[in-house]
Length: 353
Image 1 (spheres, rainbow, N blue to C red):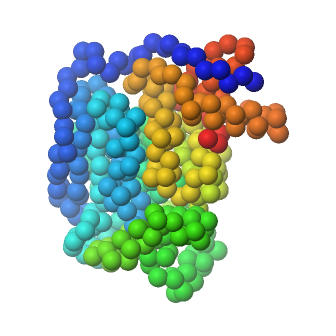
Image 2: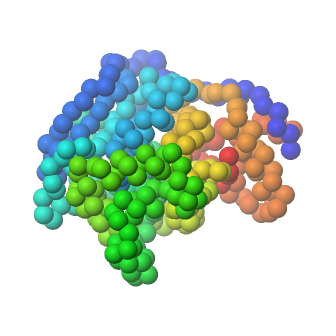
């Protein structure tokens, strides 16, 4: 298989800049009172009447700044940032100095996202979630399919915890501090053993957080989650891109989720040499994958095949040589037999890059 790259021209079904009412939004911050507490929201980018907003939701132990800032500030991501409205949501009680959660609070409630969606008056959104955020946005998309045009889910686990997991968690809660439990959720064992600078910075920030009580409830609520019951005939009604590092704690959960999804609307991106937070450690690769995902939905013009395409081609060549029956895999590059379209939501990719 040749790895020669050529530009592929496609017709954009929903052009970015033609006949659309737009208004620039620059770091417009809001504190919105919801039935579940104060929701801190930052709007950024361009508000338009035809494109969905991109709504991000962070993982436990993080806020949106620490979870998504490197990704959305990455140079090549600015093509998306300047043409979409970004809605960065901090879950109630997760910001520094937040008041304690009320008794009986459901930290993973989708009503918070629904309330935000109504207040900000966006017709539809593309959800981008990590860990707990991916789970919350998945619940929201299943309950409100007409409000979600696409989902990018990093480290998703759609399953409820079984008895063995529950017992293991109980034992861990006795033998390990909350900080170490959350770090084990965020990072791979390899990353924790190496004690990278990223791990050290998160350990210090979480251990010194003033809202540690809320963070603990957020963590406990997630661990008591119910199964989303994803099946081929009972799945998301929108295109979905599943993302996980090949060394991530939730790699197996993401693979299992992919096996249950509709292959005609699902893309699966397994990132090589990536740990638990690929959006922080490999923003370049995730940016390009996100661009292809948006392009496949008709919201971006075609782009040249670049390093992600080459690496996917190499990986897929190896995969096919080992197992020629991997029909779920797709390549983004041009082969010697002619051109092939960049990935659209109608293709499922199981690749390492």
